[in-house]
Length: 159
Image (cartoon, rainbow, N blue to C red):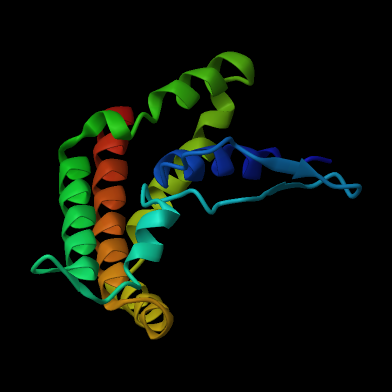
């Protein structure tokens, strides 16, 4: 028996985290669907992450700091860009292709993300910052706040 509930939850997560590549899942021999390849999430390109490691001055500016500023500015622009978060397309597709009874599974991650506590997020981002620049932890913290906000707004329209 396929885990269809998870399939619809994966679709929601794909949209919540604004993945920039294709929706990739696999069906295993035990008839389970697994979501794979979540690397193109959070709208931050790998090139920018790589540039954060260049801590040198060039023409009176620190490259690492300039890249961090640009990424945060883009994030703030995304905060205002509601078109970046288009949840309705898959909502309608699921309703039409599979039936309205599956919409509750698509919407479940929108509810679940609201329950993730700030302390939990801070803990895993602090761990991330042992490896990556502190700026990246701040970026993800702000991005998660945006996701929670967009999910909350979306649920208000669906209830």
